[in-house]
Image (cartoon, rainbow, N blue to C red; front, side, top):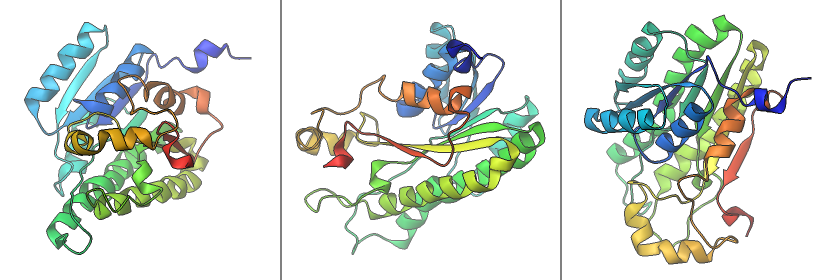
Length: 258
């Protein structure tokens, strides 16, 4: 029987986290690094990555950064090439995301394409690269997709429309299930977290206007904080979830149950 602490131990593992320089990605990097993982964080801005690496080093976490733009067609392969040149990837956290606020009748094809490329298309192509070049040959791996409660439901008509974001995250939910079914034979688990509202650069404007409304609709009467995603992420990225795959866990203060 394996000791419980060992099930969560990530020593010797390398975790690649997209959108890892701030917000939820950095929170996940903190959690995985604290439990022993070597952390590779990717984002568009070099200065934010540099600050994140320094922050993680201050916590005793070994981290390396990679400048990558997941909105560009060449982004997924270029990132995979760079990271895999430095070694294998045992854990992939697909956290990079984009949104666009507009009514459904007003959103443009360009805005729709941008959101879909970052949140869905290029998420898959990075996963494909890491899967076939690292995890399948290694006989296992952990993939964690960051979906959203927006992918499980619509949004209230009184709030700014996010139809492309909702659609893309809904697709990530079923991509997670489909990939889990296909890659389980390779010892790869594929799961997703569906966060509710957390403070971030992406949600700042929305929370400034609708923050109290969001809290009022949550059974826990709050939004997520700097620690609320850590436990769930650690579970899905460690051996503790060895018999869990294709699952979507809402981390939302209970907002999706009412």
